[in-house]
Image 1 (cartoon, rainbow, N blue to C red):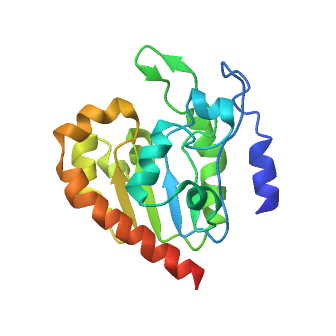
Image 2 (image 1 turned 120 degrees about the horizontal axis):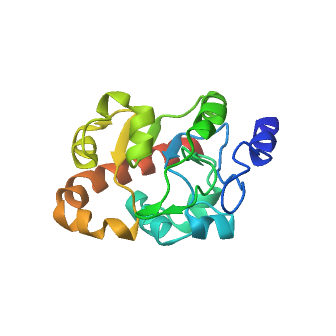
Length: 191
């Protein structure tokens, strides 16, 4: 695992990114929970810590874990579709660069054999993990994308406040189940 982490941290595949490559992720062979997001944003790039922004505050609330647990519990892994900030376009951040997932995703997932729950966050993660849902809206995918091994979540960005207001079922129906699953898996890993 250490060799792979070192390789990933030294990655220069996307050497032409506006702010340069700076792979940001958290993987561990003991992980039971995988957070499969999109790509680090500008704030995350500057800080070098995944989800250390308002999106992360919301995500930790959704999961029912505090900051220390989120960053230090080996049961929780964070592997975005793109490891580096892709830059900004007219509508916000650009999509994750596809060559990143091609180069690293399979190798990293193979090093985490204990994964029991994958949290698939946002369109790009949905398309990679569940290509059969690629034509569905994120709303439909969130409604349908739950089984014993995975849950689809909208992106926790403040840009999705409107979506959350329009879909109150997410907070009422999805979040209690999500929190219960996270707590159960974390408790199992402590024993």
